[in-house]
Image 1 (cartoon, rainbow over the protein chains, first blue to last red):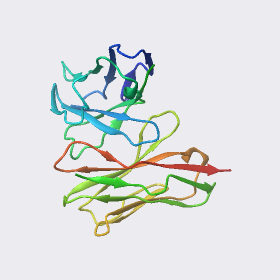
Image 2 (cartoon, each protein chain N blue to C red):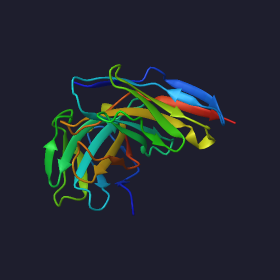
Image 3 (cartoon, each protein chain N blue to C red):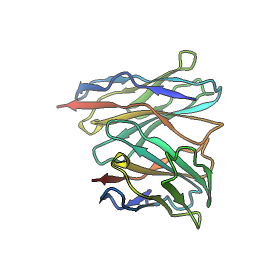
Image 4 (cartoon, chains in turn orange, brown):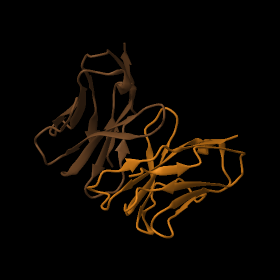
Length: 115
Length: 114
């Protein structure tokens, strides 16, 4: 079946603008995660959804970042008033059920560039 | 808090040879999972192998195997018969059974030379 998909693949925006990044998880996966990967580093956790609710949002860096998953499937990561430091690859992952025991499968990421 | 350390930023190996990538971690948890992910230039993070901490036997997936030393908190990846397609960034990752987030190391860039 299809893997995790993310759109857009690349996004270039100007400082101060609003952006939305979309993640479509593997069908039937109830758990969804967002990570951010800066150049030359490993991914860092942002937020974890179990179903429609954010079970752990402690990785969001500040209140400019927000994510939703209204129907328990597709998720959108929203960034307000973008800053140059937000430039990174944003990775989405999903797992079947329990985040603690089920393997996370990753999408190809969205490369965000803030000019 | 858990930390994962990969002390080899870059490694290279000749095609068909064997290479070992190192990873150490720090945790106070007793039960957890460890992973190796591969990230080629396409950015897609691909699972290579997974190890459950309570299992003594080292995990193996075809040409990929791990050496899991729980007391030493070490989790190295051995790639046998290296292939050109193995060229990628390799990340070691940890997740506690009491948590939900993967913690990644800094990565090791592996280049397989013809």
